[in-house]
Length: 297
Image 1 (cartoon, rainbow, N blue to C red):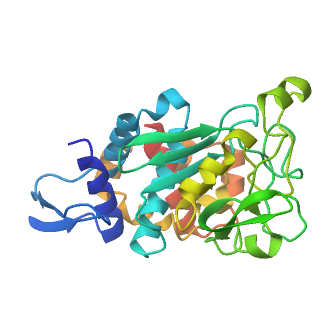
Image 2 (image 1 turned 180 degrees about the vertical axis):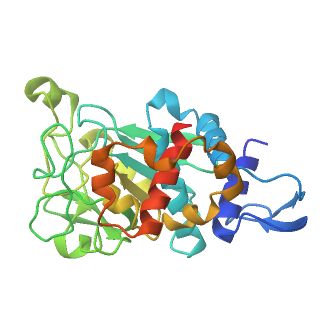
C-alpha cells in the first residue's frame, strides 16, 4: 500500500488533468510497475498537495532535513521527465537542496521503488555561487557558478577530475549549457568533514556538483545513464518559468483555493515580494502566489 500514493501522484501529474466531471476510471502505471486501476467518484477530488505530503512522510524525509519545498517541486519535474521518456527504469531521483549551507548534507538520492533514501551526503557548489551559502547561479560558460533546475545523468568517463559523470541540463536558459561548460559530477578532497572543520565550509568547484571521495564512485555508478537530478533553490525566476514545474499550476483546484482563501492573496505577501513579481506576467505571478498561499495555509 505504501506505493499507492506515489502511483497516484505520478499518474495525475503525467495526465496533466486532475479533474473529471463524472466518475471515470483511469490507469496510472509508471515504468516497470503493475498498472493500477483507480476510480475517482464525482464527489471526491484527489488532493495532490496532501498526497505529496503523505509521500514525503512515508519516505521519512523530515528526519533527513530535506525541505518539503525541494521535494514537492522535484516530484513535479520528475513526473514530467518520466512522462517524456527521458529517464531509465532505475527509479532513482536525486535532489540537491541549495537552500542549505555547504556544511550540511544536502545531496539526496531517493529510491522511488523502495521509497527510501539511498544516499545522503555533502555536495559542493561553484566558487562564484557563494561561500558557505549558495546565492548566485548561472548557465554561462566560465561563470564558475552552479546551475539550477533539472538535469539528466549521462555517461561516465575518466578525466582530469578522475571518475566523472556527464550531465545534461533540461531547463533552457538555466542549465542547458552544462556540456559546453564541462559541468560534471566528480569527487573532490575539499568535500569532506575535515575540510569543514578546517575552513568552516566545503571547498568550491568550477560549477560542478562535487561529492566526497569515499562515496562518489558508488553514487555515480548508481545514478548514471538517465536518472533525474533536481538542483533546488527558492528562486522566483526559475520556479515561475521552468516548463517542468508548470504542470502543477494546472492541477491547483480552483474550488479548494476559493474555499481556503480568507483574504486577497496579495495581502499575504510583503512589498518586496510584490516588487520581485513585477517582471512576470499576471498568470505567472498569480501561479507563484497561489503556490505560496497553499503551502502557508
